[in-house]
Length: 464
Image 1 (cartoon, rainbow, N blue to C red):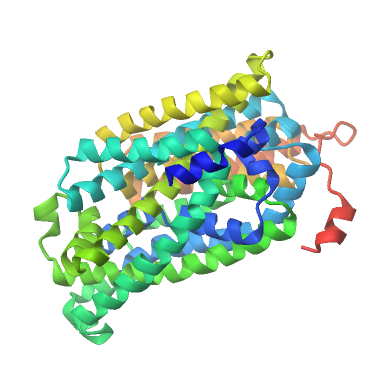
Image 2: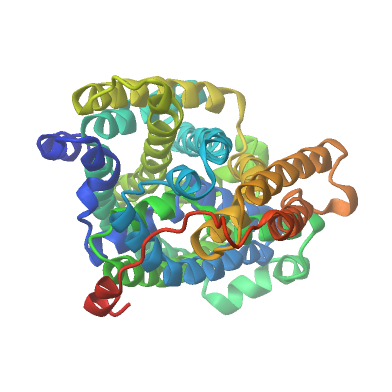
């Protein structure tokens, strides 16, 4: 992976190459990088742990995200077009274009916080894997993970990220999502035996209030998932963006089902995982270590590392782009392309270390992921969609929505999430109400907010 990253370093000549791979990604690369990123540590290790501890209800964590991503697939072509025609590279860029610098900074700070926390969860998942299988300490595992993915991300930016994702995607599908479930089912005795061997309550799809909160968080987060917006901006055409997203999400649908099989197999074959390892998140790596022959175990471990790194590098790069380009560059006017590339690599290393610190203090992957995503989903999801489509949205409306959504989610969390409802639900509802009401009050027909150019020639050419 590191060698691939350094190979693509020579293709980096400007910041657009570093952050968006020169807007050159075809549909297959989009498919591979999307799939590899969205089934990362939080999804695979975390959802595997939820399956082990709570049963098939874990599928409800993946389905809303899947539905949201299918919806996102249809708007991804518009995102690519808006980005290419208006020189827009990120959600904060779009906010500034339409609503001014205040909206940009507010969005950028929220993205930076969320992406850094998400990088931390990927390190957490990787460290758990290394501890479970390799016998290293959690701290040593976290350091190993950071050194690997920071190295190739710093060298080649999104080029390194997406083309290592292609390799990681192939390894992942072969060994993690085809080989392991087959061997697991053979060992358990088939689907029928599996169903008979787990408690009935683990086969119930009735979700707990906490699960319901996570479901809504996943659904709203997809509207403003910075990693998916980045892929759409980096596509070479609207058609490539849309086709790649659709194919990637279809593969993701398959992995949701497979993760259930793996998690339930671990429950049957290894009933003492929580006592032995201290967390249900160890279910999948423990099953790999227990079930597979030595040679195949090595290949499957490589697949596990691959998917974890593919998510970590994605969120790390977005963190760098947001902090350096969207927050610091506007107040650092003398930063030319050469300096920006240099500082991008420096910030990649520094933020990788910061994410390591987060991981050393937070050990539960999926709960950490949902904690970060809930604030982000409540305050940025609907405003990002409005910025892309609603011409009558105003700066005051967007800013009000962001503030109300963020404040509501924090207050809701501090009060202990009443009735067990996650913070993203009330936050998003009040965010949307504030956005719409304030926009209608402040909208002026003779002074509309700027709206990105959309070229009919591009639409005819790509017919997306």
